[in-house]
Image (cartoon, rainbow, N blue to C red; front, side):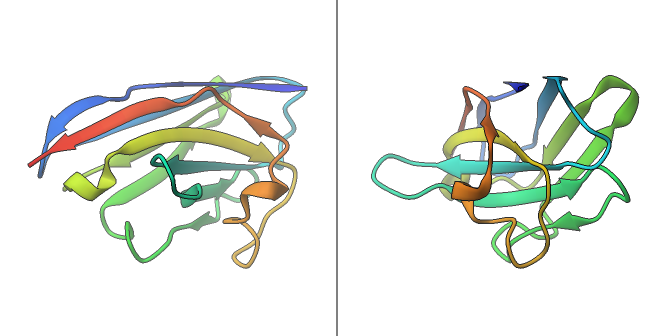
Length: 126
């Protein structure tokens, strides 16, 4: 089992920044895929960033590329999501998720993830 705990959400004005953290514990492995998804009521979860913990490959959709940056601190088993130039449409519940493998073709498929955190709310006002 892997436990994931998100933190760092909050309210910010458009153009501002937030950094989310995802702390992993339990049976973590050196090669996992840790991702951030977001969801608004009535819509499917959308992948916004992923990182392979071995090698550091990262993946982003076009909607957040150049604004969001995912990174990891291996010694602390923590993955970060730095969000800059936030827009009102970035408002959502943000979830951290983990699976044992992903690639550029599969990382956005939420059903492939074995473990999920409880989520942290991000609200961007105009």
